[in-house]
Image (tube, rainbow, N blue to C red):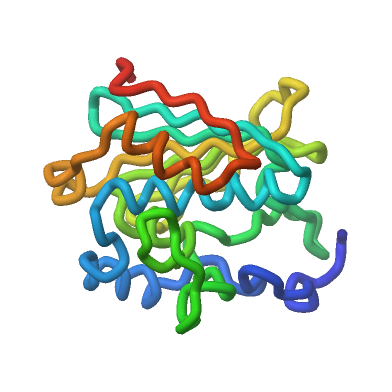
Length: 208
């Protein structure tokens, strides 16, 4: 794109912002509000983005892996998170993990997820995870980045293209969410039926 980042049109997130520390802390201080039902809700927040991608192309596939260490990986075959070049030639990924999703977070009529609780955005998952690794594959390049409680701890690290596109989010929820989970593969399959355009593959407690 090679144009000033501040001039990029705001759709779902503000491109001019990289990390909103106050926003992330607000989530962490209100766990019961933003993660009702615990791990189940965090998984649905991530899957909702895969469903967005599937809706754009009329179909999509999502793989959910529940690892033995309590972490979760959710991978889809969509277009990948929007990534652009700024006026300095630097790669910039849409700040989905560390800033508000402007469509949902403060919106009184945010759409409900299949657990009936409002959708708030991916930053909820990042803020409430001890660590999160976002792997992003797009036609214009592939990168991975690590976060701790929503704060980037690495830059975008290029990875080898494999001819595919899509997003993989691997996260370890904070201990209170792991300790209280009641998530089962059958439960996920039932909830996922709310997104018929998205096919699912679920690995339950596979070794990490």
